Image (cartoon, rainbow, N blue to C red):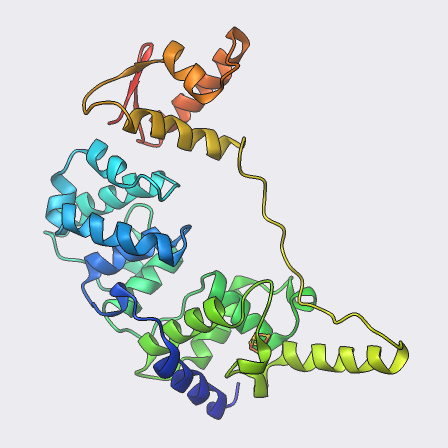
Length: 307
Ligand code: SF4
């Protein structure tokens, strides 16, 4: 990517960036909370939960010493409840093993529970302003399209190759703005289904755009009324009725109980499935055993409750 295009993206970000609360802070705890919430939840839903979470758990220490059930209750509406348990585990490890001081380096951050390569890179970059390269869905898509070509031609490109590309492109001393800009252009312009190429700052150097324009031109030359080609769109997995969906329903049922209360399996089953029957019992036991193993609930004989 030519330097002029890198500068164009940074200038576009300066003009168009959304004013998001986690972009106004360099507090690593706040950045961690936002990054964990953003992993599988949309920005609009995260903003109020981010504020509510930090109101209830204003410091790492406060989160570490709070009952896990409180953290899971506050996570309601965000989904993927395991993130709440892992977030608290991270807080406890930092308090107990690092004296409450957040690790700064990616290798140390990676050793924290539930912190993968993306989150470690994001904290090092967005809290400590290090020029670190990392990949999330938006960054992957933008780099692939802009530097390599259309989705259908680049699906086999590995994360290792993309990471090397990201590291080579990041302008020294401006890693924070660069990574935020890649995420932002992926969220607002180079979306999965409908990339808005005409208003994209990367268009002059974009390989996907050039390839698509060439293919469209060839089609127009060959066929009287060609259908425009679109960058491939991924179909969403069905969610309702999936195991993850039922896991969420179990936690919702336990959240609805008064604090400290438990529910028998016999009463939990019909709350998940209106037609719950004896042959569903093995399935239900497997479901709650998994949640127990993940630290999301406590299974005691026939009773389940939040931890
Ligand atoms: S020009 Fe189009 S395909 Fe290329 S990065 Fe921009 S929006 Fe994505």
